[in-house]
Image 1 (tube, helix red, strand yellow):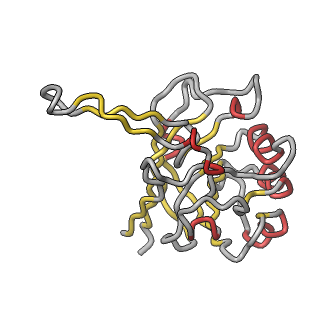
Image 2 (cartoon, rainbow, N blue to C red; image 1 turned 45 degrees about the vertical axis):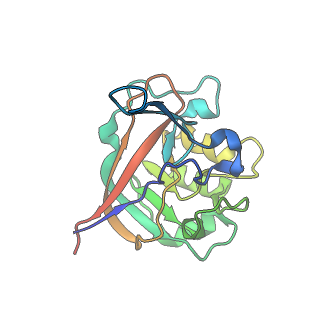
Length: 208
């Protein structure tokens, strides 16, 4: 059995979307042994920082939020596809040869996983790929960028996937993970009323 932790490490200097200072996690010591008898740390962090899942409220005023989300939904089989040869975007033409099936939960490994620095030209899932994934009725899509799309007016990738009730996971780290089938355990923090939830994601290869 081989196990992979494919989550981003939360640190004050970690990669964040577009290198925006406001998205950097802030760790503050609230209490230490000079002040009292315990050591306590406060974390201030945007919910879209690090590995996380999106809800449709992220892109739509009337969209769904995290209330009532079933965490067992993210304990399931997934398929990892190696698309590290792509330079700009994942399109429908790139997905056609992959034999993706209805009900699949797909994770796309790209050149994004090969660096820990934010790349303003990160490989994203374009609108044509989103339409195909919706037509195929996949259950979820995970990417190794902090955004599933970029430079697309109106956010058609997010909206197409949300409209089809497809789960979106962003910020995976797939560098060490070969293409194949895995068991995924991705547990979100139990926060109500928000448009994104931080995730700790592991993959388990039981096929050895």
